[in-house]
Length: 289
View 1 (spheres, rainbow, N blue to C red):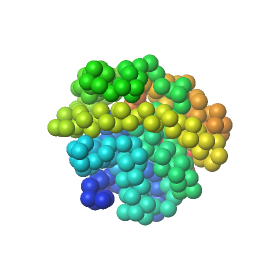
View 2: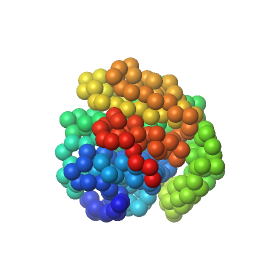
View 3: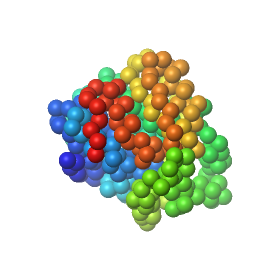
View 4: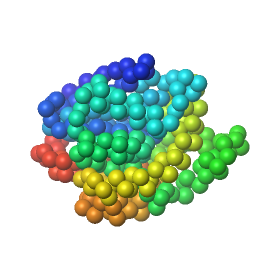
């Protein structure tokens, strides 16, 4: 059974879901934009009999604290620091694997590259670390990154609309009728909170620093060769198949699986991905739920 927890870190509440035996292999599930730990609601029951699962919400997302941009500096560095305090401090984890999707990649790769001896394995699901993976969907971000003004910000705000949130879940799906509306409706409810638009815009602007860190993360891959499983929705409009394949340059022993689905691959392929995780990280075949 999944349990739900809150940990106060430097005065800010960090919410996380926890499941599975404490003696099980720790697997930290790091969510993407615009979601939260809610995106793992189907994966967690498929792994919880074997793995010790931790799925946090970043500051500004889900049930974690959402201070205003005047109260908290929304950068990926700061999101990662809060999670480091949760994982190494509150939970006392020494070694664990990470599952990264979308925003989970810049958060997780920061932690992994700074604590390489703590990360036993990496599961990548449409989480980018290569310039080849950045699709043309990011074109409107480049003027915004170069010069943030109301004019360059305007097209970026479209990323916060209900239509775009639904698009992120349904585009590229094998069967859009299988995508639960709970997913994008839940995410949008948090995006619609007063002041959250500024939170997300600040993170969008900071995202350019992630691109600058790609070479550092690639160096970590080459030097440390963490066991890496890549399960990639090949119809993702944001992160390309070329970005998935690029991992193999630095991680030649990585395992790559291209799935016929979109950006939020867990919505259609949670059982497939769970089975890959069990086989790759160890454990019996996934139970059906």
